[in-house]
Length: 535
Image 1 (spheres, rainbow, N blue to C red):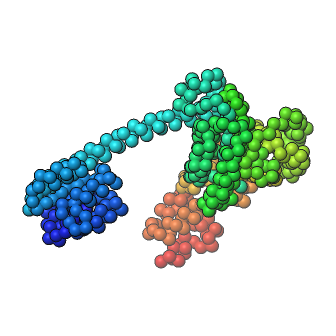
Image 2 (cartoon, rainbow, N blue to C red):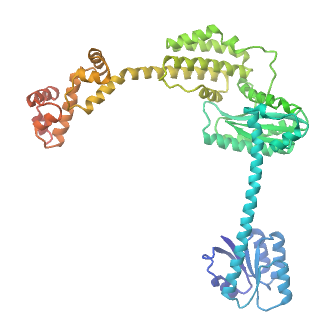
Image 3 (spheres, rainbow, N blue to C red):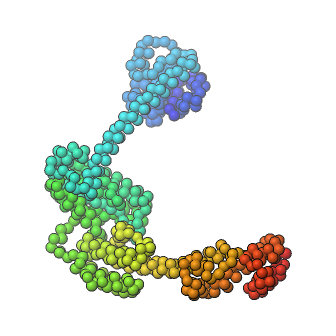
C-alpha cells in the first residue's frame, strides 16, 4: 500500500482532499496531514512517503523549495502540486523538479483520482522492473556462488576433475578471482558434547557462523569461498602472505562472537581446522584433507579453538599397531559370548594403548572406527533380522565426543545397549509363536479349538507347542482357552439380555451343562448367579 502525505496551510483544503478520494479502495494510505512546508520537509526526510500532495505556497518553506530538497534526498517520491492560480513559471519549475502533476483549485475529484492512478501505475511498473532486475542480478550472483561452491564439492568428491594447471582457466571455470599468492583450506565445525545437533540447530548455527566468517575475513582475503558441507563449513581462502597473520587474528576475535552463541546453544563448541598454507593450487586437495584431519585433534585436551594441521611423518603408528589381531579376536569372542564385562576390559586396554597418542586425533578416530566395524559386522553375523545402526551413524556419533574418555565411555555404552537390544530381540523371537497363538485364540474363541489345530496354525508340533505355551503363560492350552471363553461370556451376561444357552453357544460351548460347570469352576458362580449381580 502506497503512503500519501497531504500538505496545505488551509485546513479546509486538506479535509477536501482527504474526502475526495476513497483511499482504501485505491489501496492508498494517508499517513499524515501537515500545514507548513518546513514541517512537511522534515517529515518527508524522516519517513519517506510514496506520494506527496502539496500546495505551492505555504509558510516557512514554499512547495517548490520543499520539493527541490525532498527530491534531492528521495528522487523516486511522486509529488502532486495544487495551486489557487495558474502561473506558467511556477508550473515550469514544478515540472523541472519532477512533479507528477500540477492541479488548480478548486480540485476536481476525477482529475485527482486519475493522477493518483497514473502515479500508482508508474510506481508499480518501476517496482516490477526493479524486482525483475534484482531477480536477474540475484540469479546471476546465485549462479556464480553455486559455481564457486561446486569447486569445494569437486575438491571433496571429484578432485581429478579440477584443472589446477592454469589459474586463468581455473578462475573462468569456477567464477573465482584467485591471484598468484598463497592458499589454504579451513574447516569450521560446531559440536555439542553428548548430543547431535538437530537439523534446525545445525542450519541456524552454520548460518550464523558463516555470517561471522564473512564479516571477519572477507576484507583480508583476495578470494574467499564458503560452502556448507554436512555439519561443517569449508572455506578456501587466497591471501598475500603465508603467515595468515590477519586471518588468524580475525578468527581469534571471532571467538567472542561464538561464545555469544551459547545463549542459543548450550555446551556449544566450535573448532576451526586449518590446512597447510600452499603457494600452488595443485595442493588444494591436500590442504582440504589436512583441515579435516585437524578437526580430529579436538580430543587432545589442549582446549584449542583454532587447530592447525601438524605433519606427523615421524609418527609411523598405524591402527593395526594398537588394535592388533589378538585384541580383535578377543573382542569378537566376547561379543559372541555376550560378555559385557569382557568387552569393557578390552576397551579399557585399548584406551591405555591409545592415550599416549591422543594428540593424533585421526589415529584415535581410526581405532574407534576399527572397533565399530568389528561390532557392527559381528552383530550382522549373529542375525540378519536384527537391526543395527550403520557405520555412518557411529561416525556422526563421534562428533559428540570431546575427549578420549568420551570416546571409550561412549563405545562401551553403545555396545552394551546393542547387547541388551539383541537379548530382547531373541526373547521376542522366542515368544512370538505364543503371542500369535494367543492372538488366534482371542479372535476365534467361539470355534472348535484344539492343541493340534493351533500348533499346526503356527507351524510347531503339538508336544513342543504345549510345553512352550505352559512355560510362557503359566497355564496349559485348554485352561487358557476356557478362561478366554468365560471372560467373553461374562461380558455378554453383564451387558446383554441374550439367553444363557445362546451365550454358551456364542463362546464356543454347544453343551450348556458343561459350559455352566466350567463357568462356575472359574468364577465361583453359575451363569445365572453372575448375571444377577448386574441386574
